[in-house]
Each structure stands twice: as C-alpha cells, then as structure tokens.
Image (cartoon, rainbow, N blue to C red; front, side, top):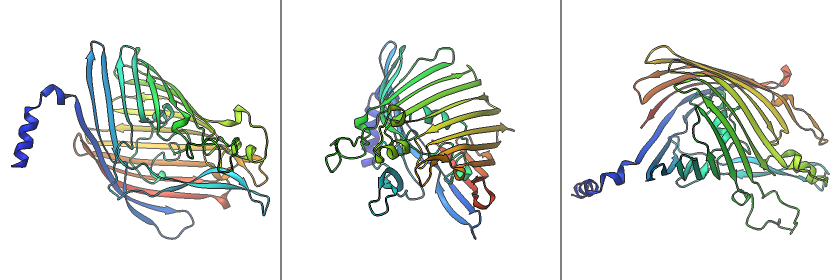
Length: 390
C-alpha cells in the first residue's frame, strides 16, 4: 500500500519539476595482485576503483540563463578507506639539533558531497560555480589516465598523485563559453576554507608568525578541442600559498630565514596535446611540480597514453610515465638531487565492452623507483575488474 501511495504521489507531481534532475553513477571494482621488488610473495586485494553516485540538474531561469547544480558522493565497494599520514611542517629537535618532519593525519570526507559538488549559473557569459570540486590542473593531468585501478602501478597513479594542489577544495570557478573549441578557466579557493588548524590565526604559543594555516589556492587553465573530435591541447597551472608540503617554506621558517613570496608558494603546471576520436586516442603530457609534494622541492614528469578500439567490444590500451629531475633536502638541509624519487612506469591492457554501460578491464603495470641499481625499488600489479555506469 505504501509503495502504491508513493508511486501515485510522484505521478501527480508536475513533469517539468522532475525532468531536469538526473541520477547517475558508476559502480566499479576488481581484484589486484601486486608484487614488490625484492620482497617474497604477493598481495591480493579486492579493491574499489572510485565508485560514485550523484545527482545533477538545471533550471532555465530566463532566455540564455540557467541554474546548474551537482551533488556527487564517493562510495566504496571494498568497505572504506583509512586515514593517511602527511608531512605538515618541520621542527627542530632540541635534543639532537636536527630538523624533523611534523606528521599529521588526513581523513577522507564523510557525509554526502565528497566528490565534485557545486551550484552555479550558466549563460552566454560562460559558467560560474561555487562548491567542492577539482582545480584546472587535476582536470587536465588525469585526461591521459585511461585506467581503472587502486594500486598506482596499474595506472598513471604517480602522474595524478594527490598533493597540495591536486586535491578537491571548496572554491569558486569560472569557465568561458566555448569559442570554436577553445575554453579557459579560473579557480580560487579562499584561505579561510583551507585552514590547517582552528579559527585562530596564531599558534598555541601565540606566535603571530605562524601562518601555515593560511592557504589560498589559485588556478588557471586553457583548452582546445577540435569540434567533432580530433586534435586537443590543454595547459593549466595551480598555485598554493604556504601549502602543507612546502618544504622550502618549512625549512627556511624553521631556520629563522626570511621567506620571500617565491618560497611561500608551491605550484604545479601541466601541458599536453593529442588526438582523439571514436577509434584512436593518443596524447603526450609534461608536468612540473614545485613545493607541493611531501619531501620534494621540485619534480618533473612526462606521460604518454594511447588507445585503439578494434571493434565494438575490444579496446587495446597502453601508457608510460617518467619522473625525473627530483630535488629535495638532505640531512644538512641543502637542496640536492633525490634520485630515489626518480621513476619509470609502463602499463598495458585491454577493455572488453559487454554493453554500452558495462565493461571488463584488465591490465598489467610496473613502476620502478630509484636510479642506482642497488637502491632501486619497484611494484608490479595485475588487475582485473568490472565497471557499470548508470
């Protein structure tokens, strides 16, 4: 009886009031078997690939102007994730006189809206939105990451890794209207939305010089996509002030040195180009990061991906990435090359499309870290999974 009443109530609502609300999502996961270099045995996990569920919609307010909104939530078929350790600063050990990292915990958001969620307006002027969403760099550097995975070795996990500028934040963003395939973006996340501590701008000892809780984030980007498919190109950059992983700012502050604007900001920039249509996708990207990764001052990377659809069912894929020119601080707090952060990676695999909404994925990937043979480490992963979109 209750189900009948609910159905009748929904049927009685005006059609226009429900027509612009869309329920969508992806449920995806699989099995990954990983093997670390110089370690006996393998590790087998049932993993989630980033499942999600969301609602989105729009309302026509007037001719040429509409309200837009989106509310998206991450879900996990593998039972959830744990907090991870991050470096939030540097401090001097009074007993040894050495500088040591200050560790902290980062917990994934709980509740609804843990993925891109916003409300905004769209018209001839472009699109303005406010909420919790990715910045221009994240939207670009994941474009060539065509894999479903949990282990970073099974996809371009290093190239798209989480750091001070790649994570989602509460922000306001603007996107220009499409001008013959060209669009540009601007992004600002206010400092008050990025506090590392409480509302007090001073630390526990009342030190007014402690401003690591003040972290405004700025981003810009520009893209071109040939109408109808074909050539594409993207550039983007995001900067964060006094980021949690800003080693230069932390070290210079701890040593009592004067910190200039150059050292206060960390940034990441990416540029890529390629070709994409219904049959072939291929692209090459370059990325430079400075003071946004834990333990690193600078890092450069290149990545390439290609995919070829043989028929309606099978797509063959391959990716490669190379991280180089990594620099960090040594025990004497001098900036030196960090050859242990250097990496090279390769991934190959195939997708089998069971339908337009359901597909099987399979891949094998390996990532190796380090330059010298005796200090190299590596991880290899084989993954098989299933994805369904609704």
